[in-house]
Every structure is written in structure tokens, then in C-alpha cells.
Length: 232
Image (cartoon, rainbow, N blue to C red; front, side, top):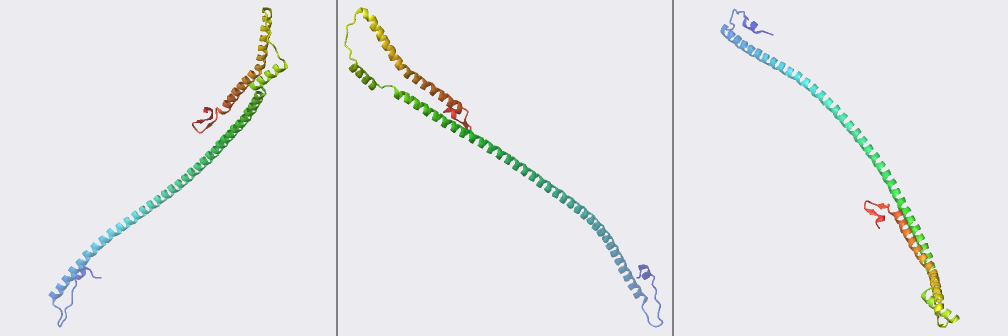
């Protein structure tokens, strides 16, 4: 490949007959030199640009490697975060299920206990009802055994028929005996009425005891937050 110096120093042999004009050859050589100098300058520019491009390519490659590493690191962090989040969510779910199961068991236990208490109170109420009915029947039987006013009148008439009496004048000496006799009659009447009064008192006491027993059994029973059986 010719250089610019070789083109400048070139010499031609002259032909004996004819040949080229020296001025034409020199002009052509000058043009060739200008062209070569332009090409050399363009080549230098291209080489410089290629160096710049090569440097940028290397920089881009380095940046690409950095970006790739950053993306890989981000992907690893994302995968780790997702895995930790899933594990934490699974743990929270397991704990929630365990708490729900425990709460369900406790609720079932409380419900069963309240049902048993309610049924026991119902049983006590039935027993109390039967006891009250039996007591009431005994009192009614005792009352039925007592004489009525009609029976009293019948007995009086029957006694008057069987044992008639006459009005006898009473002297002052016999007034004390008659008074004693009247007192004895009053005592007899009181002795007859005493069992009735005792039965009535027994009924009252038994009723009071039954009511007290009812309150003892049902005072502490509560259903819900505001309902209290003892308030009835």
C-alpha cells in the first residue's frame, strides 16, 4: 500500500517518443495526495470513534453485568421475602386455627355445663312440685277430715234428740258449778279447734320452707347477662 510520502517522491521515466506532460502528472499526484490525506483523516476519525464506541460497549457490558447482578439480588430478596411471608402466613393461620379449636372446645364445655345446670334445676323444680303437691294433698285430706258447719248443726240436732235437756233454774250456789261447766266446754271446743290451727300453722311453715328452698335452688341461676331466675 502506497504512503503519502511515496506518492510525493514518485518519479517517472521519460519516454523517448511521446510520454506524459509533467504538469499533468504533478497535478494528478497533488489530487491523489489530497485524497489520501482526506482518507487518512477520516480513518483517524473512524478509529477514534471506534475507540469511543468500544469503550462505551465495555462500559455498557459492565453496567449490564451490574444490572444483572442487581436484578439477581433483587430476585433473591423477593423470593426470600415471599417465602418468609408465606411461612409467616401459614404460622398465623395455624395459630388462628388452634385458637379457634380451643375456643370451640371451651364453648362446647361451657354450653354442656350450662345445659346440665339447667336440666338439674328443672329436675329440682319437678321434685319440688311433687313435694308441694304431696304436702298440699295431705293438708287437703286433713281439712276434709275436719267437721263442717252443716255437720256441726246435724250433730247438735242429733245430740238434742238423743239427750234432751230442760231449762233448770240455777241457784246462786250452783252458779259456780255452771261456770266451771261452761269453762270445761270452752276448753273442749279449744281442744277440738287446736288440731285445725296446728295444721294451718304447719301448712304455713311448710309453704315458707318450700319457698325458701325454691329461692336457695334458683337464686343463683342466670341465663344470659341480664336474666336472673331469682328475680321472679
